[in-house]
Image: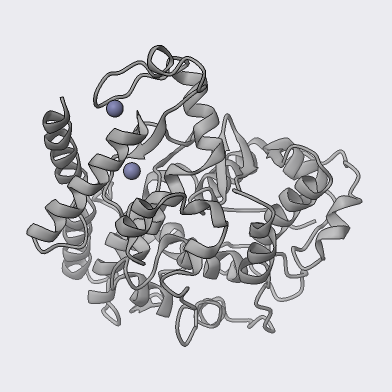
Length: 397
Ligand SMILES: [Zn+2]
Ligand SMILES: [Zn+2]
């Protein structure tokens, strides 16, 4: 049985927003000898300045301590002398309108396989295992069986790892799986937990309380996911781990979705004309809507905020419309291109507020005006997005 491995203790560095910033720095060091003390120092300084996270401790080489982040995220690998930067790294470094979070993960899900060259156990004899494909297939199998599409870490061990699933099987195979007695060591369990948090940045996956869920708007999404995400890229493994990394991350171009593909996916994403106006076919804005329409996020938000009070006009929806149920939209406060944040506990609700439909619409239209008059596609950072949100709320009240 192949042990599933990952990095540990670096969930924040695996956040797509952060990976993009890391990628922007790494491309500048492509081919450089980062083992050289002064180059390594420059690399650390550039990373810390760009990413806003420490790359400690300073007595270790950055590439030694963060090698698994760089490799598991498929950005770069160091061959002992020079840094090799992957095609994937180059493309995500160019910005969100060219490669969205979902498009990046589409590559990771179909390329990441065990044995993986970042780990000591790398070999060319064990069978290929595509762990992310296996997890997503199992979630779809449960959904199609009419069960709650949820897996906790123990279930992943007992059903998927214990049965030696490879991620190459079809979904019907996952419907027949029986639990085994396999439980990973506590060390592997922690790594598995971070793998699961990492993958929960996909728009159709969420993690709450250490369980991973399939989060879809309707059945039509299943066909889309199967087609776009679940075709593992199999190539003959190469005996040199460095060459293997190069092979796995090699691509001509990240397969892009057309600007409206994601809008079409799940017809319910666009629910009124102002959504069309707001998104205007822009990926970053579609991503914003996808987060806000997540059925699971809504369920968790409601459980934490049982009173439907609008965060902008402070109207209590149940007082105003006692017959209408929980009449709040979710609104995501980060820049439009940002995906929902993850933490060690999973998907975070920190940047989500509840708004009545009128205020939500008014705020999106305020955003549009603001971005247009500042000649911008998106807010620069969380601080700016928050400032504009607060400005809009002031206008409302
Ligand atoms: Zn309101
Ligand atoms: Zn919104």
